Picture 1 (cartoon, rainbow, N blue to C red):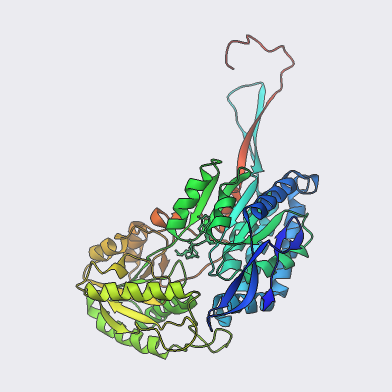
Picture 2: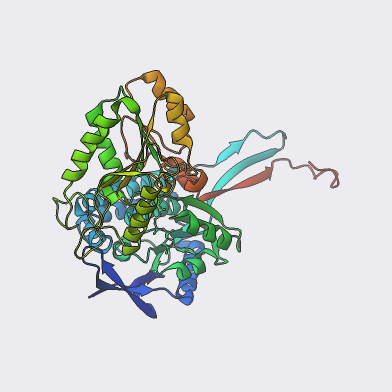
Length: 487
Ligand code: NAD
């Protein structure tokens, strides 16, 4: 069994308790993780608070912060293979994906490194002749960052990068399901030269999360996870009236019109729902397909779904690995059962294979004629696609927007004017046209409704870690006039 330590105040240490992490490919324990107690959480927040006010960090120029982030980016790139190996081992995310994703995570740190000294205040053309008024952009303070188990290095980079660029300090709670890559990331971070306490990395379950999000010294909670947990977090953050940014789940529509390039759309749909074994918040999990091409599309999709290479996550040939937890698999089985009972028809997949590990095959459910099937409204977070057909563009739009979520969407059509109408009408934070699942540090990412609020990635994300201070400077040497009249 490997053992991992938590990272508080620039030191690696054991927690008072530990828990076993399971290898999703075998279902067996492979490593021992530190379970942060409420006291550990408190120390981590105090370390972040001390670092926030320390002259080493608060007195550092934005350019220097950017240089440290650049060094971190280089270290992440250099260590990407090791980080990928650990993420694959601990979460079951296939090595083909972790290798590519973590190499790209370095680009997120590079983007925010470059942005650090471009976060500008403003000078205001104030309506008083003897005043100079300007706005300073200052860091919000201690940030509590909470991430789920899928793509933790990526989901934490979009929090740590902008938060540190803005001058905040961070306590990151890794998911209790597969925290190894984040605890190893702490070792890499430690080499970059940041002052101690600027980043603290702990792990543990809901108790540790609750202790962190309700801590009186936390100014902002940046959360990625499910909507139910988000509700707890918002309640906890109310203790301290901390601000929140919430990146939650989705039930994203993947809309294909009959003039689309069929092969390209099928490939994008395969990637949109089966990549990451479907454990992706932006999964295009509702195929909204025009009636005339439905049969041809489903036939091709079934062929491709059944040809997907399912196997060990550490094998470069594997395309779909195990789900991260047994709970995820049970959830998928239950939801498929309830959907079939409601009239959905299995096109392919649907049953868990025999043998060890938390494997689940690519699955397609045709819900035509079963609009109440729960698979159309509930997130699987697994490789399960629900299909619904439409005849007119208006129907496509209505189906697309018939969801409490609003994270991502895809539109496949060759018709330019229709594409524009769909872009305008779809209620989601992202619209991909004739592509799917593309991301970049330069583009904001996030949703609304049950998909949360706030954006990660891009310039705005860094501004969201700042608060504005209005400064008034009187330029007149005359005595201040009538003290009872507001100026
Ligand atoms: P989850 O909500 O169960 O857990 C997420 C994190 O919250 C974990 O670290 C967990 O320990 C912590 N947590 C649990 N209870 C808490 C509490 N009371 N207070 C504070 N923290 C608490 O989510 P999950 O099942 O691990 O991940 C899957 C969900 O995440 C899906 O809904 C998925 O769509 C979503 N997700 C969203 C995005 C996005 O960017 N929008 C990205 C990835 C995943």
